[in-house]
Amino acid sequence: MTEKILVAVAWPYANGSLHLGQIAGAYLPADIFARYHRLKGNDVLMVSGSDQHGTPITIKAEQEGKKPGEIAGRYHREFLESWQRLGISFDLFTTTGTENHTEVVQDLFLTLLEKGYIYKAKVSQPYCPQCNRFLPDRYIEGTCPFCGSAGARGDQCDDCGKPMNPAELLEPRCRLCAAAPVFEESEHFFLKLSAFQKKLLEWVKPKSHWRKNVLNFTTRYLEDGLKDRAITRDIDWGVPVPLEGYENKRIYVWFEAVIGYLSASKEWAKSGGDGEGWRPFWQGDDSKSYYFIGKDNIPFHTIIWPAMLMGYGGLNRPYDVPANEFLTIEGKKLSTSRNWAVWLPDYLSRYEPDPLRYLLSINMPESGDTDFSWREFFRRNNDELVATYGNLVHRVLTFVYRNFDGCVPTYADMGATINVPPLDSRDSELIDKAIAVYNHIYADGGLLSACHFKRAIMMAMTIAQETNRYLDEKSPWKIIKENRGAAATSLYVAICAISYLKTMLYPFLPFSSQKVHEFLGFKGSIEDYVRKYPLQPLPTPGQKLGEPEPLFTKLDDKLIDEETARLGV
Ligand SMILES: [Zn+2]
Ligand SMILES: [Zn+2]
Image 1: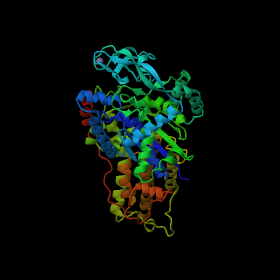
Image 2 (image 1 turned 60 degrees about the vertical axis):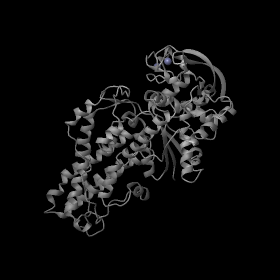
Image 3 (image 1 turned 90 degrees about the horizontal axis):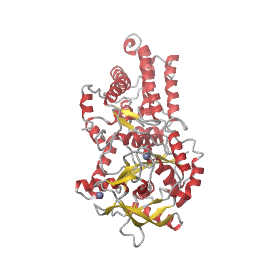
Image 4 (image 1 turned 90 degrees about the vertical axis):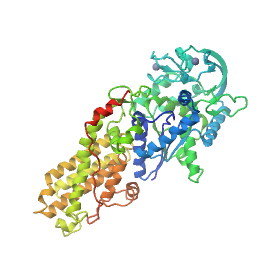
């Protein structure tokens, strides 16, 4: 039966280029997962978009003397190009700047207000006497009241991950001028989070399929007690409050951006010509939603967004929130402000997408932080992608191409009279292993469906190693002169293993898998092919092969120092 899978991915602030931390944290795992479900024949809707409204954008705009919309537009275009080049296969990547988004946000706001989950209250708001303005949360810095970290912002502490109200910050100061803010009264709307605490705890309790870090963090957070949070701010950039008398306020970004998952789904449905097409993904009993985010975003997706959905009613809550931990760079915490980061457009200007997808998959920060280093990138590219997998494909296919008239070896060449190749126990052993690993990765309840991406790609690579060992034992290149049949059989077996490999690796390495698919003589896209023939028919003997080319490029180790030297400058 076809499942409906909503793949909801974190919304990046459109105030700077994407970096590898974000790719490893959310975008790559989401893409692997979406591609996997598409291959399985499930209906996938993968959405996200640029967050245009956050104060990170207004801060950047003020720094550059531009309008926030210009900044957001520039980076949104850059994001779209990056997704395409890295192969992040969104069904829709939109922005929070659309009319559709405003409508959906205002509908949620008014519904929650009507149901009593949003209320008005006077709040003392930080005001900078030197800048003469109210300060949005991110314009304030200070000491975290929970963990004592010095660099906490008015909305959240990056060190302990706890969201907060700006008034809770210790020793607050204005980020623009460093003056101490004063607090002045202003009327705002609040989300009554406290009303959902018990219901959320009950909802979270049976989520044993969640990652441990996500479940523990969420449970602890809920047990500490939920405070109501202001959802409007005195700023002029953002979604307007849909009520008279509040023209100078905007709906605050943390409330508004999570609604993007829903508004993007609706936009996707409208653009596809079926305005109701979003419903099966949000309301169906057979649908599941997965939210791919970094760990700093956990409370917004396991507590606040589910609370908003509970209050609104009639929409599915997250099925899973497989949040990743952080990626460090050369052993140090990634920092965009200190340029201790590897920027995606910069990477893509010099290297192919699949080697990065490979490294970040096999080194994914699923259950703890992991490190990116250029040395490891070069080593894994050269030793694993090129030497283990690429060379396997290349030496088998070029040899067959030259010695069997550019075709998959035929049964006749193998000396068999019946219509199956004569396999010995070593041949069957390799095929059986490939099938076993394939099932372990692809089956319902298997590694990919449970978001164990790192283990899945590691297991797939064992089949490449195993096939190399098999060929070393059989050495078809040596025996072809005296025993063409035996050589043909082992080459055929190797081709079958390669055919399984291309599918196992497809969610991780879509570009090279498509190439292998074509080298093996298949037409069209590998995704369409596997969807159509889920039993994975093997290349047919006699099938015409495409002309093989090297799959990956060996990288010169001399460049490692050059790459490392770009960091932190
Ligand atoms: Zn803290
Ligand atoms: Zn100031």
